[in-house]
Length: 115
Length: 522
Image (cartoon, rainbow over the protein chains, first blue to last red):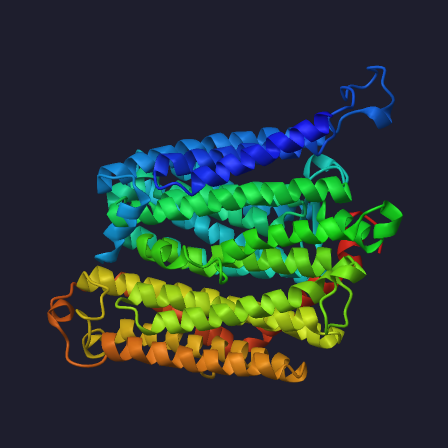
């Protein structure tokens, strides 16, 4: 049941992320990218199994029944990287606004044709 | 001795940190940056020589044994790529010290440059798929800031495009890695190769592995700028400062090529295609039989799009950027032949050709972007309309441009000649006449746009911009020094060829790679 639910949530998150990336507003594009990367993180966590017990030695459960802790370490790394890139993306968006006076991707592209 | 494997990474990391600390003293910072650039070249040379004479070296981080810990592997393939990175980045550093304005340099330029090298070195050395993702991010983070460095309208727009594309790429890479971990049960490349070779024994279904490896392939193709993932290349290369573009085109692009060779020829080639997914008309049942046609179509599209696009550019950097799309096609074409070839000799020759071509492209395109930067620094323009007559007015700089452009075309005795020769040779030996025709058409296109650049920028009557130029002899000296490496590797081609042979053998020697990483005594 949890797996089906997670699969649905993942599909929904990727759909939302893709929808946002295709918007004209740069801020929404950045949110879309963030949603996609968080969806990838969630996917990574589910790859470790969602029904096992805590992976602590001597915690009672048999070793075969624990959740894989490695993917959680991977996701922590990915979350930290995601924080950094999102912060930079937002600052860059602000710089784009300062330089061009717009964050509409269509106007930005038009500004490029004059070169 | 195995500690040496971490050497390039440590040197680049210490360089980034010390140049960050030395920010209040700009002269000291520039001196340190150059010194560490030389140090990086020295440690890479030592590692290269050690691996060449003593075989591959493996370094287990914190002493955790291979499939559990993170592994660094320095084999002939990794050290060849590191050597290319060291040469191009040292020239780019020397150029940066002379050309980037002092405020910009003291602000963040040098730490960012060295952090980019940290990412590049890590990506070449790591033997772990997730660790590869982390090094990609280290490399990309610095390159985002370096592309946006001048932060004018063009730079911010190009950097935004580059950033968003690569962030989507990173999300896809994470997905593919997560899926590969779930299906194969390991992240270590050697362990993955071993498990895929005995898929039945480990209970691995090859069909999802194929799909996930294809997803991963998209990410590498995006990094390498292969058509249809090339659209970020021209704007990004025009926006970044000249020495950064030299490193992006010369080295960072090659990280994508390296990842394709390492993962698809060493690791995924071990897996067997399920019968229902085999493409018609191809005999092989390895994953490579699936990727061969894909690589072929992408390389043909790259050669055509890059070559035709470079024909009608109005400025030097735009022409060079499109040219690097076309030239990456020449790197991928022999890889495609190698993937479909059933004869192991042809396969090894294909990878050798791709690597020699990649080294040639790294050096010559690095020189060309630096030369274009020097033209811009002297005349204040890079548009063909304002240039012309550089050959008479700036003969030394023009000669350096000419030599590296000829190497791109493939004129003996420059390195590029052997690159082209090997590509034609492998196409002929494999009997791939279509590939031969495409390579020939690509070579003609290269001659076309190179002569156009020469005609419009360097011949004719000098214009106002060229006559009123300010001389920058030290910048020109750096460009000439890098151009001379092309002549040197062309005349003394043997060491490069044997290094590329060894690298191709290392890429194809899966059992050797698995044994050395997983610690089996050989």
